[in-house]
Length: 275
Length: 286
Image: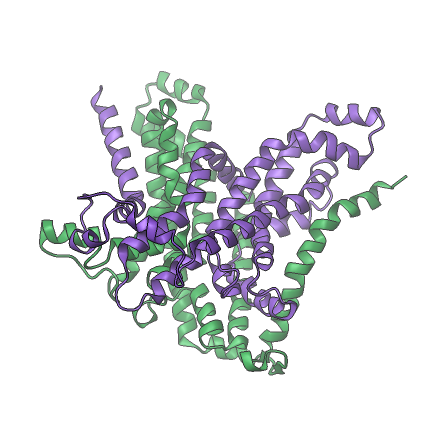
């Protein structure tokens, strides 16, 4: 191997190690025996064990991980699916007829750049009045707003790439617009729909601020639940268990993200360039 | 037969209704509460006080401290992330062409929730349980207090940069790979050396990407909340209070809804102005 290539591998190794260090160290800590954590903070595990994960996955009064996981799953599903449903029809009209290009499109796309806290407080007040505070539906609705800009951008791009001839052929066969959208356009948009969903699910799962402000108990998502665990364990934090909680919280998006990393990478870039 | 006009309205309806319900109504509320004095006890009976809240926000040193923190944090992290991301993208591109999986390894930090990342740093930097102080003590017999007032800014900057450099890396990698091979070959025929090739040919071609990357990273740094909040909260003496944390604290900790709303409206105004300016600039550059 040439020396240049070796150097490149070295740089890659260092970058990968340093950037992933918190995740790596947390995983290692989670796999240590409870007694070992306080004695041995190094990256070497003396006797690997799943004891911490067993503790986390056992329901206790202080920490019900299944409850948090369920809340996150439901809210993230709403937050990932709803933007696609509301954005798909107008995405077609935007791409094909230029509807809302001047105002609606920039308005939605610019939402991505606004600090989320701006919406959090008025939404809190509205939710308080509407009885949506501390509900999975309420959390899911606001996560849908967060995901809307990217969903709209990806879907408009996807529709624009469908060859016009396919739509024209369907029109010749007498298909009206709803049928055209449902039978022709929607299936052809499948790659973009999957990307939007995967990306939206990860974003929604990882969201923290709205979970923190709009939920207190019944609908607390996993990210917020994990932070509660740090705050409430008065005295010392049980680091092994805490580490296992974080790994459990990070695992669903990580698994999804690594399986679909090409799509994630692609949609990040598409969203950035058009934004 | 539906006229296209009516049909377009029907197609737009789901999105428009959704936006009105979840953003239009709250925007109205924020104007009402921004102009009123309200606490959680008097939530349904806001008392009109005009621009009082805005005056209180603008007269609050904490607000300006938070604004300065967010601005500094946004600029510094954006520049560092883009510099590092550009270097990694260009330097590793020859390897990545043959080993696509390397991208997956490098973007892992982005897929982890920033809030979790903040908590993970609590563990990693912990005096007794954290591996970083452990190795620093073992090798140098010294480990700095990462989270005290003097060091905490550097700590949160490093944490943010390490998590989001992959984003800049990804943008630059895509732009780098999109440069047509013929451009490089033509330059190579003319005897252009690699270093010169980068500065004179490749970097100028990636300039639009650099603008976009800097802008997006700045925006995300400016509005930072999750990772700082879970790592140190407002920080010792409030030194890590970002704009988002300032508003959050005014709202939920101090129950001062009017002041929180006024600060949020000011933040919105600032963000909106910035956004419009940046888009003008980018359009002119493009």
